[in-house]
Length: 411
View 1 (cartoon, helix red, strand yellow):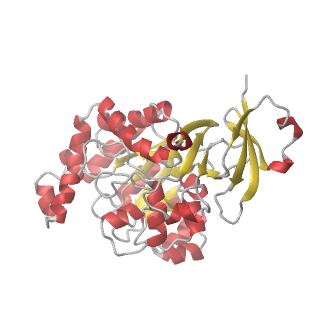
View 2 (cartoon, rainbow, N blue to C red):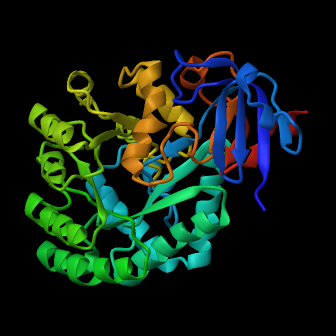
View 3 (tube, rainbow, N blue to C red):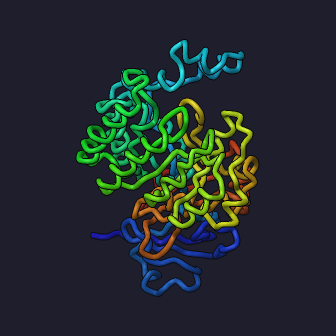
């Protein structure tokens, strides 16, 4: 038997656009989907006759749930000691000689049990959920062998099954060269394409495939082999592109209709034009830009000029973006990348939804869509971009069910 709920005394921003707010709105939810929304005075009589669970809010502004479309949420250990060494003046080479860098995370992830990875990831995920995140992408890529990549993806699936959040999984086996394949990148790509990817896809663990295309990782030819295999398996494609240099990865991935190209500090206009034609989203990761003390800004003005959708994400990972706050990324996107409030909010809702590629995640609130929304204790949506380190979500709803109610915590 279906259940219906009525939500009133709220201001509604169906697309998270500050200029498109219904000041006195109502929502009607049946099971996990919205069946009506609009001005409260226009509420159909059928929904005024009782029999609905009535949630009367306190005038909060309601937006779609937030979407974190690029994360490495599942990993073993952390790299805090390396961070301390870097602050003390150690070079990346010195840290690597001590067994640090991505190799240390690979070792810790391989050594951790599935339950240990789940317990550490669920704490990070909880921080994001409390802030209003209702959908997330989680990548593998710290295993670099079949068993550990499988273990990471199983944890990601488990998080989606046990927690009030939609999880999209991405296989990132081509993240770095594992120690056992030192100086043999083509041999490792053979394993990624011919063993790992087909098996993991057959087990239903993979929604999309990603590659770190960079001079310190994999070249264009190696990346294309992975894209071809992913496409043959019917999987979506994403790419870590132009973060440290201009490789042309965004242009390559666009030929395969990639959902997104991510990082993009060194992206050029040719890459932007290819992304525009393919409908590929530009995912910007200000946390990594900040943590690495990067000075090369992504080409924001060119992305605007060519109307390429811009998303923002945490890039939560132990090495270059140890953050679990998508709201902080809103602030950083504005302060570091000069995004407007409208652009930043679109970047964690509807544009992030495009980059995520999940059929039930649109980043908007509409009739027939999933009832994933957040009630914010703010006077204007600009406050979501303005504040940092200040909890603003009053209520988080995912699939029509309250997952976090901060009003009770402060009552």
